[in-house]
Structure formats: C-alpha cells, structure tokens
Length: 261
Length: 302
Image 1: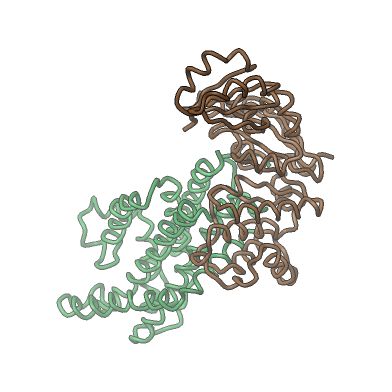
Image 2 (image 1 turned 30 degrees about the vertical axis):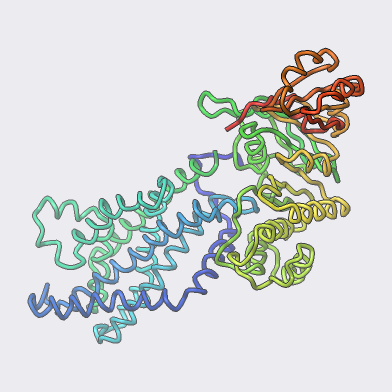
C-alpha cells in the first residue's frame, strides 16, 4: 500500500473504533445535544408554521405547518452533518490533533475520513429522529410512510458530511467556514424549497435549485410527511448519492494531500 | 533482524531537499538517539518511518515490514510518543487509554487488564478519572507514554519526550525509559537535550540539513570529533587574554561573552589565568553538546 493521493478509498472496519471515539465524546454531552436537536426544529415548525402559516394559509394543498415540517427535516439534518464535519472535525484534525494521534496506530487516514463521514451522518440520523418525534407530537404524521424520514436523514447526512469534509480539508482556520455558509448553505436553505415552493422562484433560480442536493432531499421528505410515496424517488436518491460519492472522494484526496506530506 | 532499517532516504518539498540520503539501523534492545537542530529532518524521518510520508527514494523496513506498503501492520507493534500533546481533552485518563487501545483492535478484556498496570507504570493510578485539564505537563507526558505502550509494542518512538518538562518530571520519564529498555524494548529517541542523549542512548546519530553527519556511542563521538578537555572563560578582559594565549589551546570558539577553549591538557592555559582575577573559568571534560555544536555550528536555527 503506497501512499496514493488519488487512489480509491481503502475500506477497513477499523473505522468503527474512530466512530466509537466520537460517540463516547457525544455521550458525555448527549443531553444538551439532544435538547438542541429537539428545540431547534420545534421552534421553527411552531414559530413559522403557526406565525407565517396564518398569513399564507395552505401551500400546495397542505397546511403551511405540514409544508414546513418536511423542509425542517432536511434543513435540520443538513445542519447537523455540516456543523459536525466543519467545526467538530476541524477541532479534531487541527486543534486537538486527535487525527495525528489516531494515525500513529494501525488505523489510516482513509479510516479516519470514513469514520468522520459516517459519524456526521449519524448526527444527522439523531437529528432526523428528533424532528420526527416533534412532527409526531404536533400531530402531523399521518402514516407509517413518515418513518422513511429516518434513512433519508442518514443519506442527507452522508451527502453534507462529505461536502463539509471537503471544506475541512481546505480550511486554514474556523473563519474559513463562513464562506461555505454564505456560498453554499444559505443558498441551499433559500433556494431548495425549505420554506416556500421552488415554483415561486424565477426560472433561472429554479434551474439552479434543480441541481442542488437539498432540493432532492426536500422532494423526498415532503410527500413522506404528507403520507404519499415520493415521485421520481430513484432520481432523487441517485442525485444525493452522487453528491455524496463525488464529495467523499474529493474530501479524501484533499485530506491525504493535507495530512500525508 | 533490525528493528528499524532505513536506507538512503530522500525527500524534497518543491526545491527544498529535507532528507538527503538518511540511513540508520536499530538493533533489538538499544536506545538510539536522533539529534539535530530544528529543521534537520528528524521529524520527517520519523513520519516516513511511520508510513505517513512517502519518501522520494530509499527504503524503510520497520519491524521487518516494508514501509509505507505494510505501514498499518508495522504500526500494530509500534508505540509513538509524539512531540505535541494530542491527548483527547474530552476524556479522562482511563478513557484516553481505552479509546487508544481500541484503535489497535485490542479486545476490551485485554485492555481492562492492561490499563491498571499502565497507570501504575506511569504513576497515574490516583488520577485514573481525572480530566486532561486537571493534569500537569509531566502527568500528560506520562499518560502519553502509557498510551504508546497500550499495544505492548516492541519498538517505541519518542519524539522530544521531555521538552517543556521540569527536572523532576524529566527524571521520571528517563527512569521509565530505562525500565522499558530493561524489559527488552527498543527505543528511537529524538531530542535537543544532549545530557538526555548521553544518559540514555547506546548509539546516536547527529543530523543536520537532511543528512546524518556522524553516528556512534556518545563516548565514540566525543573521542572522534573533539578534544577531551574544555576551558570556558568569561569576564572582563576575556578577549584580550585570548589574543595572548590562544596558541595554548587546540581550538577556540566564542559564543556571547564566553570563550570555549578545546584542548588536550588544560593546565598550562589555566596557569595563565591565575593572576587575572577578573576572569572566571570552568574546566570540564568535553561532552556531547560540544560535539553537537562543533558539527552543527552555533548559528540559530529558527
């Protein structure tokens, strides 16, 4: 095994030990972390759902609070993986030098990147479950179809974890991540149908929206929350997987370039 | 079989050649020192041996395995104490050891048996549940050493293990290193402290500018490169005294307001100091630091 910067990922189950390390840290702060996971989406759904919902009434034939519930699932799970793969991963890589310590053991950088991706997606999964609980408590979940939100949360997590790790590998410091929020995350939130239907946007922006990953997540989540099977399901899943796969490979190459020189 | 054998290692970053043909080999049970000023290439050499840097040329055999090809397998039997503190700040002392052991795939049962012994070895038994913030610098270093031993390695890399420690803490680390050697472990030590190298290393290499410039036991290096005695002279009028009597020394060097006279027999030169009360002097045997400074120069390496 030479050090091949552009080589394909080398998978090994040793990544599990690194995932467990992150899990053990999370467990120590599980209570505030889960409270955040519950309170944030609950406030969005209740605040905007009732507040703005009064003004806009029904959207696409559903109450606004139901409309926004699906948006919140995607927004919340995207945020979980994004924060984990930017700020938390950067702490482990650059500030605490945890990755350096790990690389002196029989684990490799590929194991680390796989573990970080799966871990950040696990955080999205937790966040998805929390949002699902909020949706159920409010009484928005009508059918068991809504349970498919759980695997969707993990998939959205994988996608945005990989994208986040690309930035992580490029970043000289925490401030650098603001570019990513301004240029990637904010457009994602505003153009992908989280708060209002994409159809409201001018054609040019709709075209942009159609290639952004969060749009495809929203188009899976919204029918599920409203008790319907999503149309074009395979296409949406494939787009999310493609983003995840390409971003993962780029993150891996950039991380190797950064750490193995 | 050598525990580590490095042959003609070369590495460049752009136009800068950081390793220009480094060769060294460690026999089982020895403590081998790698000495050199900052930027000499010590850390790059270590990283290459760990399989974390691909050399441009040369070969590395670590514990009989070719690196970087079989670096993962070789690291299973290797312990590393790195220069910077990379303990896990969110974990207690015990958790740091436990989590690190898992990276090696060591069964939980084995870890539960090993950890108390390692706490004992590093005198941290009373601190088992302390957080990293509650530990002194010396305790953290001891924990890092204990962590490096979690896989019961055959070979241990220690990269400047006592930098920044107070004398008491340094002595504890030295004592633990001697215990490891007594148990048959092999050690590769990098250090800036010549007394540390002289005390612990059976053999060492002095490195500068990406090359190994001399290798041997501390005594061999002193005998090979330098006069046996040193007279350090300082105080008002030193320069004038040197100008008059320099011919009695084999070699004279200045650093700041001190003059170092290297020679075989110091008595004739000491005699010239007797009626000069303004000059103070120290007469001593030559040591490794004198060799190091002769070979690598007195210029700052920032």
